[in-house]
Structures are given as structure tokens and as C-alpha cells.
Length: 281
Image (cartoon, rainbow, N blue to C red):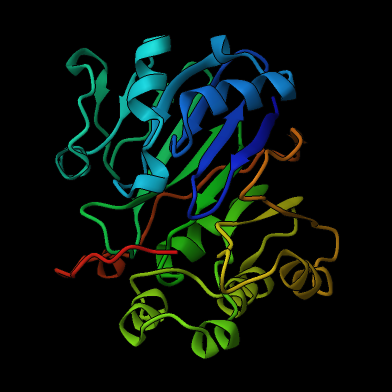
């Protein structure tokens, strides 16, 4: 069985990703309004009746803005860690709250959702891999650096939503305060174009068919710059730049099934230091 994937929106103004098969789907994050989620799903010919759950990566507003409304409207279970729920302060229906951890993949009908900790300045941030019969889609955004877990899971994916947030020159020469520049680039913020490219060129699998370059900064990046940078190294991988203004088309992801190895070196566990949270742009 294969997967159908789409970015409904990607950027600091809102993030929401659709991953599913013919009958079952999940959303990863709900950072745009419920109305926009409905509109964009309808335009793509996708049915909310197939969506069985929402998985939340962390509590920043661009990942949870539409969560309460979309969960209430469709009685959708929300998979969110206790620390993220507490930090979000969202009035979710307690009967719809579910949790997850790194040890136990979540099964939603034929879909399996794995989670793993990432580096980001949030209470309890996670990335996800959604699989269906060995076809694997990764959602790797808001990652301060490509740690061992990111590298490991990236290498098992047939498609990936990968953050390529900022051009280092544009960020450092731009008008942001120095503290915010350091926050974005300092290992708990976002992945730069060059860091994302290094991950792609060094660790992609031979079966990575689609790369969605995601969460581009409005002020410190340009879609045409990112597309040009990655296209020169794409090989057989289809490069898509996910927009902060509109949905992508739906992409059909298929390929030889690949089981994800679960052996992640214990010493590479992500440890989140206490940090001051700053608004990102």
C-alpha cells in the first residue's frame, strides 16, 4: 500500500501536513484555521472523513492555531504529550486527548506513526514518521540541528517534509536583533538551507522519491533560492518547495517497502536544555 501526502501550509504563519492512504489519514500539526484546513482539503479532493487523528509536534502557535476548532468539529483525537499540552494552554476536549512517546509507535488503522525527540526551543518537541506497509513519510521541521535520530529516520524515508528555513547570509545581514539571529541559528531554532542540503546529500536513501522543502522563512529565504540550491543535487528525487500561502498538490508516494530499524543509540538521546522562548519569524 502507498501513501498520499500534501502540505496544506508550511511556514511561520502556519504548518499543517496531510499523510494518508486510500481510507485513513492523519494531520501533523494544525497551525492554520479549521476553515482553511477544510478549504484546502476540499480543493485537493481530500476528505476530512478519512482523517482519524492530529499529531502535534510542539506548542508554538504556528503549529496549533486551528487545533481546538478542527478537533471539535470532527471529534478528532489529538496526540500530544502532557508537557506540550500544558505549555499550549489549549482547551481541548479531555475525551479526545491522547499521548505518545518514543518507545511505542501509534497505530491508526493501517498507518503507523513513530515519534522521536528533536532539538527546538519548545517544552517537549517531536518529529514524526508516518508509515503504511513499509512506505515511510517523514515530517522533520523546526529542528535546530540534524541529530543522530533525524539522520537515522531520514535514511528510511520514501518522502520527507524537511525544514530549509533560512539562508545564512540573508539572516546574518538582515534586520533581526542579534539575539533572535542566534536563537534561529544556534541549534535549538531552525535548520538552514545548507544544513538541510547536507542532510539530503549525505544521508538520503536510494528510494527517496519526494523532498518537500518546508518552513521557509518569509524574511530570510526565497523559494527560488531553495529550489535552485537543491535541484542541482536532486538526482531522481522530486523537489517540491512547500508554500506559506497555499497547499501543494497531493503526491502519491510508493516504493519498495522498507522496515524502520528501531535501534537508536541510547547516547544520542535528545536532551532539551532550559531555554528562553522567542517568537520566530
